[in-house]
Amino acid sequence: RRAGAGSLKPCAGGLVGGLFIAALPSTRTMTVAALHAKSDPMQHSTVTAPALTLAGRNKTFKIGPSQGIKDLWATFMQDFGKIDGQVGLRAYGVCHNFDGRGNMDYMCAVEVKDAGQAPGYLHTLQIPPRKEAVFTHEGPVEKLPETWAAIFNTHLPAAKLEVAHGPQFEVYGEDPRQIDIHIPLK
Image (cartoon, rainbow, N blue to C red; front, side, top):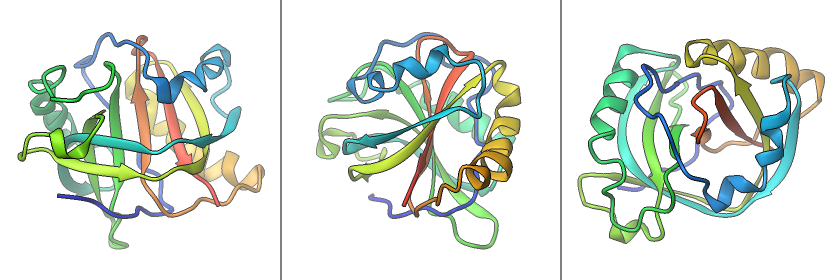
Protein backbone atom coordinates (compact mmCIF):
# COMPACT_ATOMS: atom_id res chain seq x y z
CA ARG A 1 0.00 0.00 0.00
CA ARG A 2 1.37 3.43 -0.88
CA ALA A 3 0.69 6.70 0.89
CA GLY A 4 0.29 10.26 -0.35
CA ALA A 5 0.91 13.76 0.95
CA GLY A 6 0.61 15.01 4.51
CA SER A 7 -0.51 18.31 5.99
CA LEU A 8 0.59 21.46 7.73
CA LYS A 9 -0.19 20.29 11.28
CA PRO A 10 2.39 19.17 13.84
CA CYS A 11 2.74 15.46 14.31
CA ALA A 12 4.06 14.89 17.85
CA GLY A 13 3.96 11.13 17.56
CA GLY A 14 7.03 9.99 19.39
CA LEU A 15 8.68 6.70 20.10
CA VAL A 16 8.17 5.89 23.74
CA GLY A 17 9.40 3.57 26.42
CA GLY A 18 12.90 3.16 24.99
CA LEU A 19 11.76 0.57 22.43
CA PHE A 20 14.48 1.72 20.06
CA ILE A 21 17.76 1.95 21.94
CA ALA A 22 20.67 1.94 19.50
CA ALA A 23 21.17 2.49 15.79
CA LEU A 24 23.75 2.94 13.10
CA PRO A 25 23.89 5.97 10.80
CA SER A 26 21.89 6.14 7.57
CA THR A 27 23.30 8.01 4.59
CA ARG A 28 20.16 10.16 4.44
CA THR A 29 20.59 11.69 7.88
CA MET A 30 24.36 11.94 7.96
CA THR A 31 24.10 15.25 6.08
CA VAL A 32 22.46 16.79 9.16
CA ALA A 33 24.68 15.14 11.77
CA ALA A 34 26.03 18.54 12.82
CA LEU A 35 22.58 19.35 14.21
CA HIS A 36 23.21 16.98 17.08
CA ALA A 37 25.73 19.41 18.52
CA LYS A 38 23.10 22.13 18.87
CA SER A 39 21.51 22.53 22.27
CA ASP A 40 18.61 24.74 21.15
CA PRO A 41 15.88 22.74 19.38
CA MET A 42 14.70 25.95 17.74
CA GLN A 43 17.86 26.12 15.70
CA HIS A 44 17.40 24.33 12.42
CA SER A 45 19.11 23.52 9.18
CA THR A 46 17.47 23.72 5.81
CA VAL A 47 18.47 20.82 3.59
CA THR A 48 17.58 19.44 0.19
CA ALA A 49 16.77 15.88 1.15
CA PRO A 50 17.14 13.01 -1.31
CA ALA A 51 14.27 10.64 -2.05
CA LEU A 52 13.46 8.29 0.80
CA THR A 53 11.67 4.94 0.65
CA LEU A 54 10.27 3.62 3.93
CA ALA A 55 8.58 0.39 5.01
CA GLY A 56 6.86 -0.24 8.31
CA ARG A 57 3.69 -0.51 10.35
CA ASN A 58 1.02 2.12 9.72
CA LYS A 59 -2.21 3.06 11.49
CA THR A 60 -4.59 6.03 11.75
CA PHE A 61 -4.68 8.03 15.01
CA LYS A 62 -5.86 11.36 16.38
CA ILE A 63 -3.11 13.94 15.90
CA GLY A 64 -0.72 13.91 18.86
CA PRO A 65 0.80 11.31 21.14
CA SER A 66 -1.29 8.28 22.09
CA GLN A 67 -1.06 4.86 23.67
CA GLY A 68 -1.89 3.45 20.23
CA ILE A 69 1.33 4.89 18.81
CA LYS A 70 3.28 3.29 21.65
CA ASP A 71 1.60 -0.03 20.85
CA LEU A 72 2.38 0.37 17.14
CA TRP A 73 6.07 0.84 17.99
CA ALA A 74 6.00 -2.30 20.15
CA THR A 75 4.57 -4.27 17.22
CA PHE A 76 6.99 -2.75 14.73
CA MET A 77 10.05 -3.53 16.84
CA GLN A 78 9.36 -7.24 16.22
CA ASP A 79 10.11 -6.52 12.52
CA PHE A 80 12.99 -4.13 13.08
CA GLY A 81 16.27 -5.38 11.62
CA LYS A 82 14.53 -8.21 9.77
CA ILE A 83 13.02 -6.31 6.82
CA ASP A 84 14.41 -7.28 3.40
CA GLY A 85 16.34 -4.41 1.85
CA GLN A 86 16.55 -2.44 5.12
CA VAL A 87 19.12 0.38 4.95
CA GLY A 88 20.94 0.97 8.24
CA LEU A 89 19.37 0.79 11.65
CA ARG A 90 17.63 4.13 12.00
CA ALA A 91 13.94 4.15 12.87
CA TYR A 92 11.46 6.67 11.48
CA GLY A 93 8.24 7.93 13.07
CA VAL A 94 6.25 9.35 10.16
CA CYS A 95 3.11 11.48 10.31
CA HIS A 96 1.23 11.61 7.01
CA ASN A 97 -2.21 11.50 5.40
CA PHE A 98 -3.70 14.21 7.62
CA ASP A 99 -7.46 14.20 6.99
CA GLY A 100 -8.36 17.73 8.11
CA ARG A 101 -10.60 16.33 10.87
CA GLY A 102 -7.87 15.81 13.47
CA ASN A 103 -6.63 12.42 12.27
CA MET A 104 -3.36 11.32 10.70
CA ASP A 105 -1.60 8.16 9.73
CA TYR A 106 1.44 7.32 11.85
CA MET A 107 4.05 4.96 10.51
CA CYS A 108 6.88 3.26 12.42
CA ALA A 109 9.39 2.53 9.68
CA VAL A 110 12.88 1.91 8.39
CA GLU A 111 14.51 3.03 5.18
CA VAL A 112 14.51 0.35 2.47
CA LYS A 113 16.31 0.09 -0.87
CA ASP A 114 13.15 -0.88 -2.77
CA ALA A 115 9.52 -0.77 -1.63
CA GLY A 116 8.90 -3.92 -3.67
CA GLN A 117 11.19 -5.91 -1.37
CA ALA A 118 9.14 -5.15 1.76
CA PRO A 119 6.86 -7.92 3.01
CA GLY A 120 3.24 -7.41 1.94
CA TYR A 121 1.99 -6.83 5.49
CA LEU A 122 4.12 -3.67 5.75
CA HIS A 123 3.05 -0.26 4.50
CA THR A 124 5.44 1.52 2.14
CA LEU A 125 5.89 5.23 1.68
CA GLN A 126 7.98 7.03 -0.90
CA ILE A 127 9.01 10.58 -0.12
CA PRO A 128 10.39 12.44 -3.15
CA PRO A 129 13.41 14.75 -2.97
CA ARG A 130 12.36 17.95 -1.22
CA LYS A 131 13.41 20.93 0.85
CA GLU A 132 13.18 20.31 4.61
CA ALA A 133 13.78 22.12 7.87
CA VAL A 134 15.53 19.78 10.28
CA PHE A 135 15.30 20.38 14.02
CA THR A 136 16.88 18.31 16.78
CA HIS A 137 14.97 17.38 19.92
CA GLU A 138 17.37 16.83 22.80
CA GLY A 139 16.05 15.27 25.96
CA PRO A 140 13.57 12.65 27.08
CA VAL A 141 11.24 11.33 24.40
CA GLU A 142 8.32 12.19 26.70
CA LYS A 143 9.12 15.87 26.00
CA LEU A 144 8.96 15.40 22.22
CA PRO A 145 5.41 16.83 21.91
CA GLU A 146 6.68 20.07 23.50
CA THR A 147 9.38 20.33 20.84
CA TRP A 148 6.85 19.75 18.05
CA ALA A 149 4.59 22.46 19.52
CA ALA A 150 7.48 24.93 19.79
CA ILE A 151 8.51 24.27 16.19
CA PHE A 152 5.01 24.88 14.79
CA ASN A 153 3.78 27.56 17.21
CA THR A 154 6.94 29.63 17.60
CA HIS A 155 9.90 28.85 15.37
CA LEU A 156 8.39 28.26 11.94
CA PRO A 157 6.29 31.47 12.08
CA ALA A 158 9.20 33.52 13.50
CA ALA A 159 11.56 32.21 10.80
CA LYS A 160 8.92 32.87 8.12
CA LEU A 161 9.22 29.29 6.92
CA GLU A 162 6.28 27.93 4.95
CA VAL A 163 5.41 24.30 5.56
CA ALA A 164 4.71 22.24 2.44
CA HIS A 165 2.31 19.35 2.21
CA GLY A 166 4.04 16.05 2.78
CA PRO A 167 5.08 13.64 5.48
CA GLN A 168 6.68 15.02 8.64
CA PHE A 169 8.94 12.62 10.44
CA GLU A 170 11.19 11.88 13.38
CA VAL A 171 14.49 10.04 12.95
CA TYR A 172 15.69 7.92 15.86
CA GLY A 173 19.42 7.24 15.76
CA GLU A 174 22.22 6.18 18.05
CA ASP A 175 21.25 8.39 20.99
CA PRO A 176 17.60 8.00 22.06
CA ARG A 177 17.75 11.47 23.63
CA GLN A 178 18.52 13.14 20.26
CA ILE A 179 15.77 12.92 17.67
CA ASP A 180 15.82 14.76 14.35
CA ILE A 181 12.49 16.19 13.20
CA HIS A 182 12.06 16.75 9.44
CA ILE A 183 9.44 19.24 8.23
CA PRO A 184 8.78 19.74 4.47
CA LEU A 185 9.16 23.33 3.25
CA LYS A 186 7.85 25.26 0.25
